Length: 339
Image (cartoon, rainbow, N blue to C red; front, side):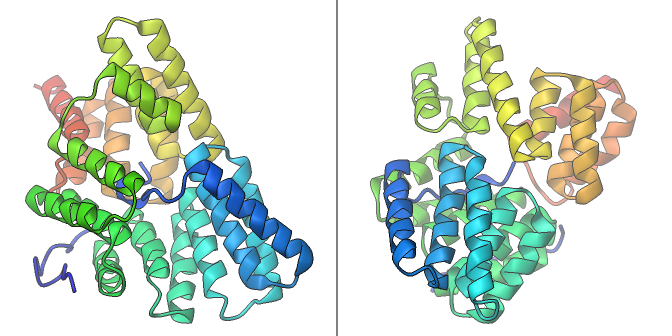
């Protein structure tokens, strides 16, 4: 049993872009599509099967994550709603699905409620605790997230729990512990995709640069906003500004459709319209006051030439020990402009 709390008893005493640790890769899109088709065929024969409707909903949440097609969110909601209509009480699998869907849509307070219902219905099932960890982390409830994470580690010490543990350590500035958790994730991985994902997180934690070719390949396989922006920045560094702008525009288009105001604020501040960046950041801050939103609001204020207002938010972003390179870069620029 891998223990988080005894390792650093006071680790989470204060208040993470959906956080990277939450996006543990599962099946590839083609496999997920086959799974969805199989479940749909089954439901045509047995339309009263609440469990299959729940499973179909979860598959569509995953398809939205790996294909970046927001239409899958509506399909997931429809399937999960049907599952809950058929079995409104004690439907832990549907509760997990609704929680995962809410987290994916950045509706973290709602995700917390579904996660709580999931663990009440199935207290020995790890996925419900995963929903809670992600929601509570994004809501700034580190103490609650720590308890949920420890329970998840006790129940299923695998890639999903170890990558979440790594991100918790990273937010507290405990980089050695964060690396250790990722190494445990690599050891527990059961597929080449999981191993590659964990090694990517290790590389990013170490600050290793990626080549244009590597980033182009990443975008081709998974055109997420994160990958698009990283590729765009590499193109910018190579003097290919027009190509870089196309990547930023595509990332922002996805984020507007998906409702991710936090990431949209950061990308707009760096590569788009500063006024729009501040609008996105203020909208997210109104929903939740966490280290993530504090950094985004600080940076949006700075690029709008309001650095004196930005500094208290920057202070808040690093108060708990978070030392993400982009956060430190934002902070240095804000402080430098005030000297």
